[in-house]
Picture 1 (cartoon, rainbow, N blue to C red):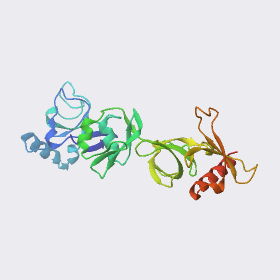
Picture 2: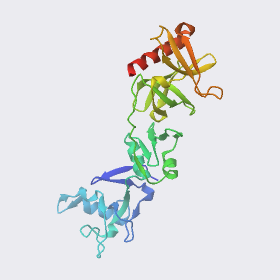
Picture 3: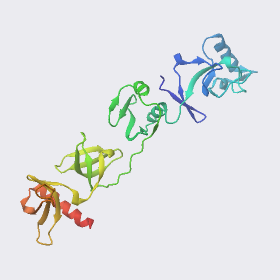
Picture 4: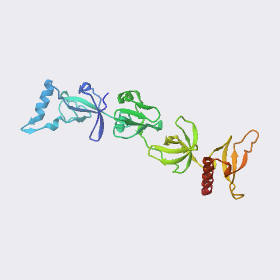
Length: 281
């Protein structure tokens, strides 16, 4: 199947390969893109000779493609052109939302998605392969075109983030494991985040689940894990460490800790969360 497209009268057509071009017939699918036969057959030679000059005037424009919408009762194309036997089909219209339409959009540098998975984009990669957000690359465009869903395609629009740089978010890492990270940079297709261990990742926007409040961030301290709450109004350096509910402590577990009890990375994390909670008030 051809991967060449052309626009005629603001209509998009998939152009046929030379070995796919066929003569125009009364039962041909309409509309279609046609041109005067231009091969070395008697009709082709006649068309070329007739189109070059008539009454001393060059008529090369007669060889330009036209859109055939119907065949008149007298066998004339569109009721105003020449006889049907002088034409051959060179292209068919591309329907909006079709796989061919999606391929054309990707060839123009746009990203597309299917209406059933609007977050899962597809795009052209290195001018010869199709890249998908979740499945990776398909090396041959023709293979994708033949195997993919044939309708329901649309232009991909990156969802507008509900978070900003500096926010904490719930997200999924590269293998889908839920985690909590801080947003460092928001790019067009990805978000640069830093997890609590200091590692940085570039994640697709769709991997960000929601924005978190500083009071929701889970901190690991030794064998314990939980959120933190400021108690500095009681005594400087003291904070609540609030663990999860357990069978023994259905009302959640609490511990009072001092900043100097923590290692440097954990202390900086806790101090940052406590400041963010204060700013959030």
